[in-house]
Length: 201
Image (tube, rainbow, N blue to C red):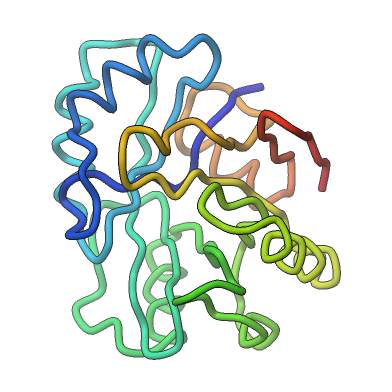
């Protein structure tokens, strides 16, 4: 069982200020969260820098990804350190991710830049049901949608500054191995957690 934050932004996102070094230092020092997915907006540059700094540490893991903006809302792709050339529509991004065998997640679906009910018509792998930057009522709507669609529910802090880090995380029934983690998420071997509650999906 590992604990991972599946939604973190670094200073390589235009609206974030977390330096890769601080992120790696805090991850290494954290008592139980030992893995993160770097999901900067429309870039993987932050992942490469974090991975470079994290490489000396055998006890932590960084997973490549990005939060990609589409004409209808954002999609997180995990497991590849590349982007589609023209992420114009939801379908184009999902098709790209499937072709590359990447994991697709709908982040904060009922908040700004979320896909909302459009998710019902998308072939996504998971829904972010616990977003550290969203109101509980909004997270509850996402949780209900995930249950209705029988999709795994995951958690991410959506951290944009250092004080946002580690507020929520996903427990995954896997070892500290990126491929195993992504497969376990697809299978629904997850539960989401915050300092206040723990929920199984």
